[in-house]
Amino acid sequence: MYFNVKDVQQFEAQKEFIDTAIVPLLSLNFDEQSIKQSSSAAEYLMSLTSFIEQQFKGRLMLVPPFSYTEQTKSGLFVPLLKEELHKAGFKHVIFVTCDHSWTSLQDQIEVIWLPAIPLESMDKDVRKTVLEDQLKQVIPILSSKWSQS
Amino acid sequence: MSNNRVSRRQFLNYTLTGVGGFMAAGMLMPMVRFAIDPALQTKAEGQFIQTSQKIDEITDVPVKVDFTFEQVDAWYKSDVTEAAWVYRDGDTVIALSPVCKHLGCTVNWEGDSAHPNQFFCACHAGRYEKSGKNVAGTPPLGPLDEYEVSEKDGFLMLGKKIPNTLV
Image 1: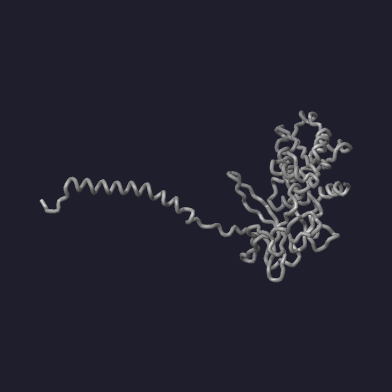
Image 2: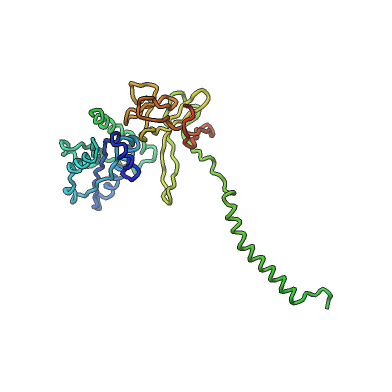
């Protein structure tokens, strides 16, 4: 499910089935040296989360990414965000990011950290294989979460 | 002076009719063309999409075949990749849509080792038989959709999504 009107309506009707929220945490960096790398990481994170959404459409909702820069990062209260999503009816809230610093919050939130892979230089087939491999790392995390409940 | 000279009145009549006729035709022709245009449109060739799967390499074990087509959404064009589970049943090739009929997840062939020879949806443990028939007692309420199948130069072509015809 995406965060759009059609899917949200379906979410409201089928709350017992759609119990997981996927939240991308997206780091933006506009410095001249890092802007290209930052955009590459953003592209990777958005492709990967859409791919996860496609595979598990009926069980999770992909929330629009929470974007921040180094300066505004401290304004992002991720554990609070998690609470709000729990209140909205999501039993599992999983954060996906390419920014390693979030792993320090691992005792408070469920975070999947994946190092960014530059997809832009790959052709379509390679890109798909890479995303499939990355998905295989995410699936065990999801299924262990789901089997707990 | 010859006998069949054209009078001034006749000359004006001829020229006015001629010019008027051209003007009327100039207005009517495009209108007629617009009116019959839908009938003249050539149909796009059944909308079959070429895949990279060779027909004679398809066995009775379902394999996932990806195919990409261009989707035009108003002025926004995007490449959409979809997949199909393709297998051979006797002489016919069957292509099933991997989209679970419950809430739209992607199903996998033998995705659950406890249930071999079935399609499995990891989201809510939905199961389908090989024909796409949903297993009673699991969440899905209908069979998997099917793709129209065709062949070109030995390669598999997939067409429109249609309701399952095997069940």
